[in-house]
Length: 166
Image 1 (spheres, rainbow, N blue to C red):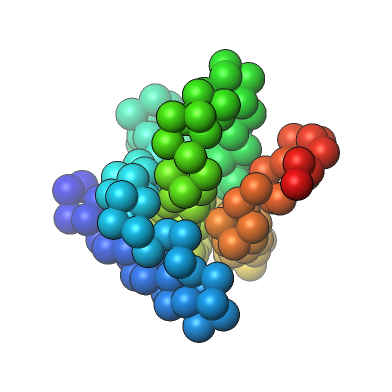
Image 2: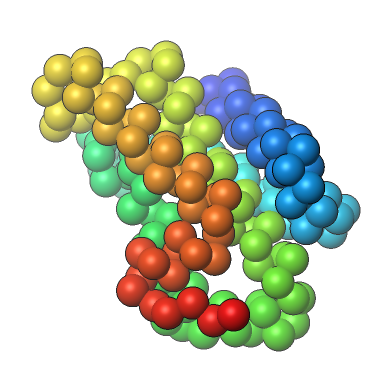
């Protein structure tokens, strides 16, 4: 299990590097290239790459790769809770936008990379029949998470039904 965890994490790091390279080419990437932002993004990326496999610990191996854990739902649930309990404003006031976005991007890319790697290696999602539907589920949710990472403020606000501020 430990080697699979590192495999998912390094695949997530590759996603983050590709993300930073593309953002840099488009001259939008300066925000996350700060060493402090990367120091926040990497542990959160690890958390995002590990979270889908928590279904084994919580529900048992028979429920591994179920649609609830292997989807974008975790990102949006945590974004909702983050805002609901007031952590969004506390982090914004204490650390600024850079670290808040680094955490959001790291988590979204970690989850997305996990889903893409599972799609490429296994493609089996419990309770969904057929390899094509499984891979479409994983790929579609990975794409949603990719968009959430690309536009961290807009995507999360739209999903939560909030108006954009500035």
